[in-house]
Image (cartoon, rainbow, N blue to C red; front, side, top):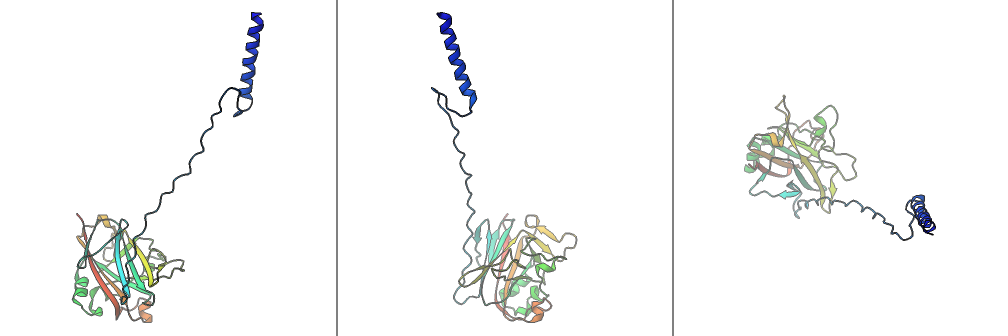
Length: 250
C-alpha cells in the first residue's frame, strides 16, 4: 500500500512539472501568475518658454532686447551687464519699416558716444564703411546665422535681413522672423566675436575675450538705394537708432 501511495504522489508531481514547462505563461492550478507591469511612456521635458518680445509703442518702428539664459536683460541708462557666455539680440520691427537692421559692434566706445551725442548718422564712425552680410563672410553663403557670431569693427556695421516667416532661410538672423500683429520679431544668437582686424584669430568665443565692454549701436535705415541694398554704399538716413554698452560680470 505504501508503494502505491508513493507512486501516486510521484506521478502527481511529474504531471505538475510538465504543465509548468509546457506553455510559458500558462497559469498552473494552485499557483498565481505574476505579470510584469507595462513600462511607463518616457516623460516629455517641456522646453523653456521664450521671453515675450520687446513691445512696439504706437509711435515706434523699432524695439529690441538682449536675452541670456532665457530671460531678458533690461538696460538702465543704455547699459547692462551680462555673463561671459552666449546671448541673443532680439529685434521687433514694424512691418513696413525696411528690409534690414544694421548693428555696429565694437570694443571702442567712439560710435556709441557719437550716437549718444546725437551726431548725424553719416558722421558715426561705425557706419562709414559698407555693411557686411553673413553671406559675405565665406565663399559659401552662411545662412540662418550658422556661425553664431557678430562682426566686430570700428567702421563696418552688420547687416541683418528681416526675413518673412515663409522664407526658407535668412541672411542675418537665426531663421525666418516671427510675425506679430505689429511687425516682425527676429532673433540673433551670439556665441563668439568675428573681428575683421584680427587676421590670425578672427573668431573668439565670448568666454575667451579679455575686453571689459562691448558697444552696440542699432540702426533702422530710412531710405534705400540700390547701392545700399547691394552693400556698395553706406547708409545716409535712419528711421530709428539706439545704443547700449554691455559690460561683463566678473
